[in-house]
Picture (cartoon, rainbow, N blue to C red):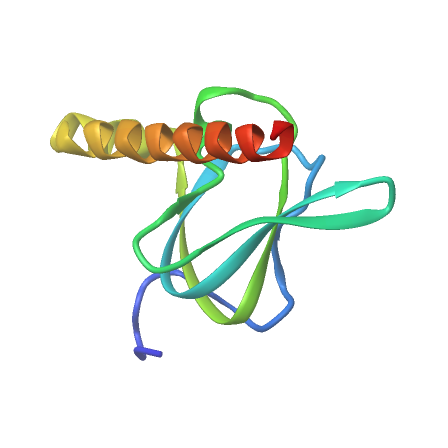
Length: 121
């Protein structure tokens, strides 16, 4: 990983966030892969993995709700933390960021719909 690069480094198995914790920021995965897990009944279910360039935890920017999932480093990960104030400033500077976020959310809703249809089949 780059020396002097922005962001925090997480080692394999480190938690970026834990399901149920309060959320007030999102993460941009700069390097490596994270797994997004939902904990139910004492068991973990892998929802998806995310890699470089992807946003994680973006719901915390829009809602002050508890984290809906746990995010864990799979191998070494570098992630940049972005709070609501900085996120809104960046959108003001570059409105295309808002469009890219909507694209990401749309893709996730489409994937969730597909997965629900497979469960019902």
